[in-house]
Length: 203
Image (cartoon, rainbow, N blue to C red; front, side, top):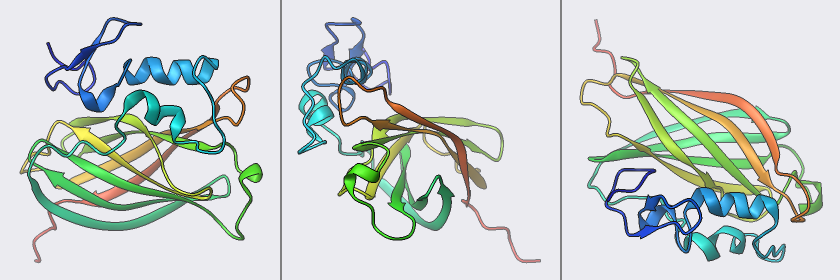
């Protein structure tokens, strides 16, 4: 059996939806059912440590990096979205996929936790390369102190050696609410970033 999210060997079967998943995409239940439980208020909600909302269930929020690192591409591009700065810091290329490292920070003067849209942003992204090959990444929470979050999204399948350009689009940002009775706030993008994988040869 294989993980329904990434295709890796499965370690467990979700007791809710019965789908199989690897250790990176679930703990006591799969990540999708965990997120649904958070939204519905079925999981305990602790505002003192927002990471417990998902960490306690999935047991793993570290980026999936089981392959061998091939190279790192510095990007350093940013866009403003509703008073926050979304930055694509770098791309890590592995032999079994690639990881996009993001930062989401408050633009301007610091804000208190109560002034932010929610306790934890969750990024959903996709990527398209120059020959219209599409790559997918599962939504992942951005971790860090309020107003300065970091997220690493793993994309699959691996990049092709002939890929010259990559367009990464953050499709939406979801905010986990402070109270379980509140709905998840959804910001719709996309916010796009253009990345050069192979530089054009000089004339």
